[in-house]
Image (tube, rainbow, N blue to C red; front, side, top):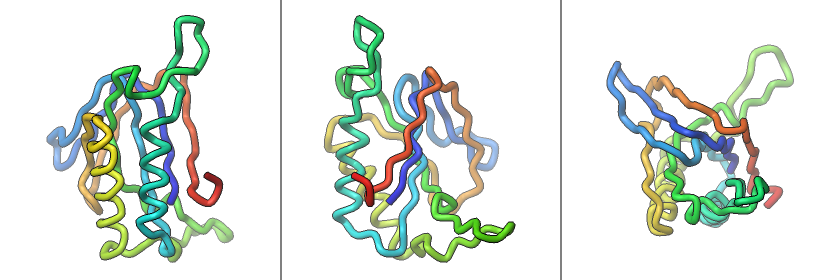
Length: 147
């Protein structure tokens, strides 16, 4: 499982011209599910998202976790994170199919909510317009193969 996590001042996702999800200070998370991912990867990445200390403390150091920072989460499914770019036209055969990806995506969301976070989402497989005001900018790539 992969996530591109961006610390934001605000972020939103619009579907069919209407705002579907919107957050203030927090994380915009683009989440990709690999064809071989299991619940174990979903739990691992949710735990990392909920505990990653990349908010600044009183000394300007990235040392504050999202809970203590009052962060909100906007989590959006992003199968293109598993693009194979060996040729000039990306292939997506390593991305999980919806029947596998949706439950794992929803498990990550559920675990983040259970951890006490306000979580907004996109809609799986929808055409989405994502806006964000990046803070820093701070963007982190998470991959469960490396956690």
